[in-house]
Image 1 (cartoon, rainbow, N blue to C red):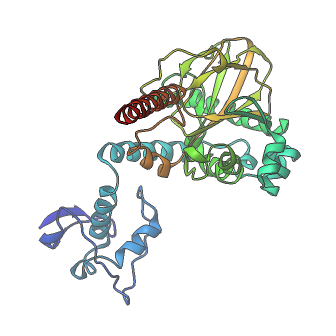
Image 2 (cartoon, rainbow, N blue to C red):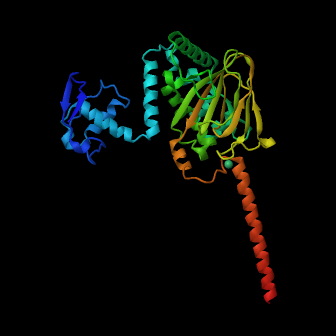
Image 3 (tube, helix red, strand yellow):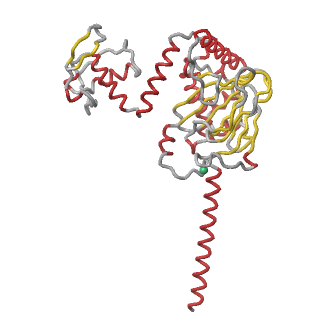
Length: 376
Ligand SMILES: [Zn+2]
């Protein structure tokens, strides 16, 4: 017997739960076909309401008649089992944090919360995406250095609206003294767009407008299977961050678009791709590339491409960052030992080894040949 609070009538009730299902939850292999699940529409949970309705028909037979609250508890435990231990807490805290913002923050520009292609993107970009051929994609990009692609992407008005929305969010944060979480460990300013309602829009942006490009340029590193993202803006200038140290991103593919405003400095510098082991190795002169930001213009690069931002010496610079990730690629990388496709140093070492083994084979063949001659 366990004691619980039953949300159906808010009284403290005592409910009998079958012992076999007390700790580790189990589901039936087949669903109860004629069972009608309860309604979970009013439920406050970290998981979606629909998932409870679907799971209910797979509950063990003796659990179908217990209270809704107990069913929810049982099913929640099963769902949590699917998340790794560290993630469980982090995921729940993040959902709670976002729920707190969403129930209090009032957006200023509702129109940017849903992708509207014709008002967001410049016509050349849109046409290339809609044509969706390798040729159309390649026709709008420049590759100023290997693996780095730049192209015109956003309309000036969309950039203005996004900056204005971020300013509105910052204003709310200051007025309410809200303990905001910054985009990453390196930026003291800037905001996570996913935290205040832009997650769905950014997901659509990644799936429908970045995947067509990354499929062409980064298919070997999960570019065609991007399925999650971290979207944020960074701000540089007076009373903001100044520069950004040398680093790699926690992404397969990174989209970096300057939104404005007026500024000088702030160049993005690249120093070659490296795996985790070779992160701090020297840069070959050919790997050095500096990019000057232009509002509305995007840079697309491999997450493991080492980079940083030089000081924004005057004005105010705001950039949108979208770290795009592929769960399938990450799973595959756990078993991979050869990083020569994404690390210049690994590639160099691999080529050196291959040359060495070719030399060895040559010398063995020569010895064998001499011996054969001698044996005659
Ligand atoms: Zn390496």
